[in-house]
Structure formats: structure tokens, C-alpha cells
Length: 357
Image 1 (cartoon, rainbow, N blue to C red):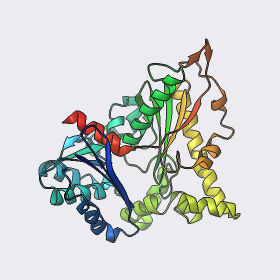
Image 2: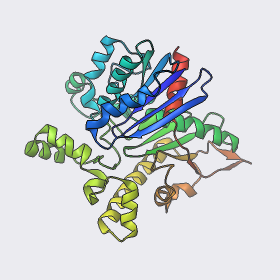
Image 3: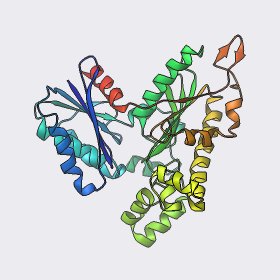
Image 4: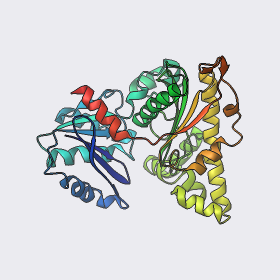
């Protein structure tokens, strides 16, 4: 059987699949205190210690330039992977904890890392290049990597099937996927291939998120680093900013409750969040030359209709046919479809593992 482990910063998700990818069992454990993470992780894994698990797949957020495709974990490449922790400090360290815990509890199982960056690994040079000195880019490996790729890829595959059933393009068409959760990102997809995405060298770039700033003036980053030092500046930008920075609340349901009670800061935080998403949707509509489907996934995307309604309200592209329609019915262009698709990263990882082995 295949165990897929998805270790986030505040949750531990796992699913077990048989060889035909039928779900056998699953669970999600919330982790409110990072000090409890190791104990909760091992407790969850020991629930499966009697199971016949031969392969374990791990979601790893950042593979850097070294890791792109799914790869079997060895002591050598695990050591290399540990060096990349600083690129995704909210995630990679927990991903590695999961790998090491599985090595301990399931010593005979093959461990395979599947990377969030894979889906965006073949972006065009103009899409992944930062306007920095060439030597700096070469020395530090700066480029847009993109994240949430497993989720974006899964949502794209389901959206393409839905579009085809509605009489859309057989090639896949033009799709904008919005993964909205604690972290948030948007991707432009053409015929199943990623063209661009909002996250960059790290998961900090792009949209306003629950605790991450998203795009801000680089001069602000420099000022924070001068004033507080690099480590504290990183903590501020990753853990104390975004919606939480504006209204003091880092959970979307609590933000919505505050808005209902008339909290002006919560309302402003939501307005800023929605506005940042709408700007990216507009930009990707222009890049793609239209949009056959606007897809929402993630706990805040597919999980909350109110979020989708706020984003789509007065979004004029939803009423416009594509400039050169790739989606036709009876010779007429079809307007953009809005789809809510629940992501299934664990199944997507299991599918990749089956192909690998």
C-alpha cells in the first residue's frame, strides 16, 4: 500500500491508498503548538505501523534547482534537501520531519519526495527571470519556482475534464487556477501547461495571504532588515503580515465573523486580499488572451463560497468571451466558467508515485 504524508506547518494529513489508488484510510491532525509537532506526527504514524505500507510519498514544498521531479530519498539527497529549508521556512522543515519520522517507523518502505515546484519547472525564461544582475542570479539561483504546484496541477486536470464535458476545447483551453488557503497563489494555465504563477523564489511573493505580506516594495524589506535584522524581518513578512498584519486575525473564518460584527480593520483586510487576487486574475487573463475557466481550490477558495463571490463580484472578464475563443459552442464563444474544485494533493502524489515505480 501507499502512504502519502502531507506535513504542513499547522496540520498533518495522511492518506493510505491501495495499488489501484483506492482510498483505504485517512486522517488530519491539527497542530496548534509547533513544540508538539514531533510527538503528534509520530503518534499519527504509529496508528499505521501494522499496515502493509511499501511506499511513502511526501509533499515537499521547495526543491530548489536540484530537485524537480519525484525522487526516491537517500541519506545523500536528504542532506541536500535540508540545505533548502531557508527557501520555504514555514514548510520544508516540517516536510523533512515527516521524512525522518517515516524512516524511523517504516524502515523498509521506499520514501519518495514529490515537489510543489515541479508543475512550474518549465516556465518560459521571460516568466521565471528576475531583473537582477546576471552574476547575482547565477550565484544565488534566483528564479521564479512557484508553489502549490501539486494542487494547481490537480485542479487543472479536473477543470479540463469539466470543460470538455461542457463542450470546451479538447486541448484543455485557457485556465486560471486560484489556490486559496493559509498560503495563496494563482496560476495561468494553457492547454494543461503552466505559463505563469504568482509565487516566486519563495512562497512569500504574490498575493496577500493570511500571515504573509505577498508583493510589497523591496525597499520595505530592506528597511525591516536594517531595523530588526534579517531573521526578524523574515518572521514579520512570513508570520505577522498579510491579513493578520492588517486586522490582527490569521484565521479566515474569524475574519469573516469580525466583518459581520462591523469590524473595519477586518473589512479592510478582506478588501486588500480580494483586490490582490483580482489584479492577478486580470493580468493572467491578458497573458492567456482570455479565460475558459476560473478555478478556485483550497480551504478558502473552493471551501468558502463567500470568498468566491467577493472575488467574482464585478469581475468583468467573467462576462467577456475570450479574445480568440478557444471554447466554442454552436460557433459562439462561451464566457468564462467559474469552478470550485476541492483539491486532493495526496491522490495527486500517489498518482505520481505509481508512475515512478
